[in-house]
Amino acid sequence: MATSFPVNRALEIIGGKWRPQVYCTLQDGPLRFSDIQRAIPDVSRKVLTDQLRELEQLGMVRRIDYSTEKHLHVEYSLTEDALGLQPAMNALCSWGECHDKK
Amino acid sequence: MATSFPVNRALEIIGGKWRPQVYCTLQDGPLRFSDIQRAIPDVSRKVLTDQLRELEQLGMVRRIDYSTEKHLHVEYSLTEDALGLQPAMNALCSWGECHDKK
DNA sequence: TCGGGTAGTTACTTCAATGTGCGTACTTTT
DNA sequence: AAAAGTACGCACATTGAAGTAACTACCCGA
Figure (cartoon, rainbow over the protein chains, first blue to last red):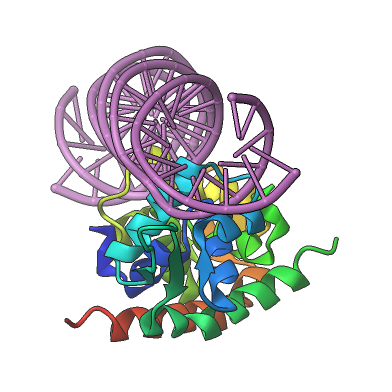
């Protein structure tokens, strides 16, 4: 299977159309669902919830429900495991920045 | 568009089902088509040629035709641009290795 | 009570990536 | 003469990721 390569574990997290944005958005700290949506305006609610659920199952995103009887309040954040990908993300970003121009 | 993120430039190269394998296989030097196939047995001829063509168009793979009237001989290798991704690849790999076990 | 905010779910559709199976054309080896 | 290697191309089918649109259910402020 493709997952015999260790890279693919990492690509499950940051691969796909929206995951890099979700990752980058959550890097700066916990956010509510609607804040993530505002940060990534082009993603639909459905796709965003799908992505967050999948990332949660992969152990990369933590979902904490602070809702009371009065208010809905859910926060999403990256787990420590996910934060371990930051060096790799930075390497990918800096490569990307060098190879845009032209 | 999603490509506003610099990460996505890099994910065009190493994202997808077979590209990490192709990348890793060619890291060790130029190979012929059939050698790549032997290194990645599960990929079909069509998909492999598709991938190589796309990576060539992205400027990540160099295709050199050494054929004579006698022999077909084509070699594929990574470009210098693509080799610039090695630090990022290593970072992804080492993250993946740490998070397999368990 | 009307619009806007919170956080979703459900059903259906579309589209790009991937896979299957065939044919081409020319070679060397047995 | 037949089989097997090299490097493809083409037509089509399947699959999975992503998108669209509508619905739920509750709260707040004007």
